[in-house]
Length: 124
Image 1: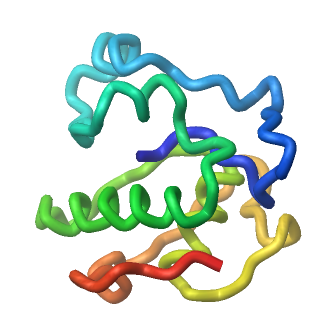
Image 2: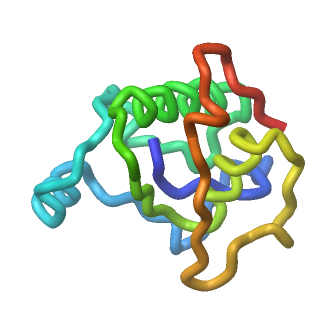
């Protein structure tokens, strides 16, 4: 699941105005050629923004294994800076801070096959 994620995680369960999720229907309508990971409806409604680390880790691991199972040479995952940084922590096993954000229109290339295996990934 790639949607807004507060980084670092706020303990008050509050979000920023930019953290509004798109509905699955609007994504399917606007991007009909995108492959969308099947997940439960609750997750689409609640999102991952203020989800506890342990729960996010499980969902992120499932999503990354799904990406790996697609066996594509390239997969583009578009999200916002907090979400990207949260996934980078999982994949690189490095503790990151807000200083590690990619910046405006930043991007990162990661070879997911190097990082994702059948074992559970760790989040910091």
